[in-house]
Amino acid sequence: MSVWTALLIALAGTGAGLINTIVGSGTLLTFPTLLFFGVSPLVANVSNNIGLVAGGITGSWGYRAELTGQAPTLRRLMPLSFAGSVVGAGLLLVLPASAFRSIVPVLILIALALVLVGPRLQARMAVRHDGADPPWHAPVLGAGVFVAGMYGGYFGAAQGVLLMGLFSLLSAEPLQRLNAYKNVLALIVNVVAAVVFVLFARSSIDWPIVGLVAVGAFAGGVLGAHVGRRIPPAVLRGIIVTIGVVAVVRLLWFS
Image (tube, rainbow, N blue to C red):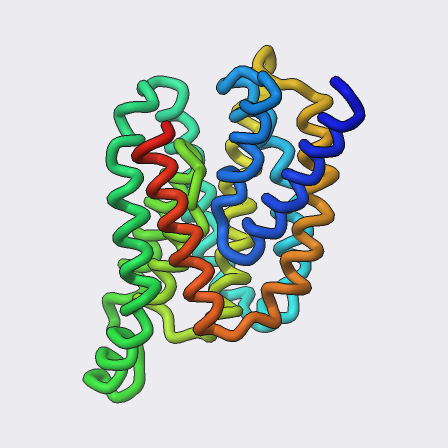
């Protein structure tokens, strides 16, 4: 590997860490970069997933102010993400990728619609219930987080978009706090997937690539938290939708 190749892979990791912290779908940057440099798809997918964990750590830490006082919510949601990711990672080992990938674009489009119309629907439902969340919100949100974790453990791309769509519909919390939740839950899913790869796909790991992506993603997570926390909600929603559309286009026409 040349110095320039290593530098570009690290820079792609930085961009992915930044995008994952703000929205999600950073894999859309690093995975094609690795393929461009001749890395096999399997090795690229496995090595990229492990490397991006570093960005999830710094991105989540960067949003710690938005998580102040939110321990009860995290204690309720984190086990669901963990359990879902374990199921998803298990499915990855036994099912062909085509079995689930065909419905991924549909899931992302639904999530994008929820990002756009979720706040309006949330406000209408709050009025009907005297400003309080309907009683069915909590169990439906929990089920959605579990399914998103299963999806993330199995496939991974645009997991953040799915979570933000779910939160936009079912939670009245500020958008930046929802983004903080997303970062923590996505990190849990990514760690589980990384552990599965280390245990069961060790021969497909390129550790130099893991290191380069990790170094870049670590810096990108810090930068993403610094930038993302200052983006107005309307702009953040626009970024989420834009990246989500790019993800759908890539999955439909370039997979």
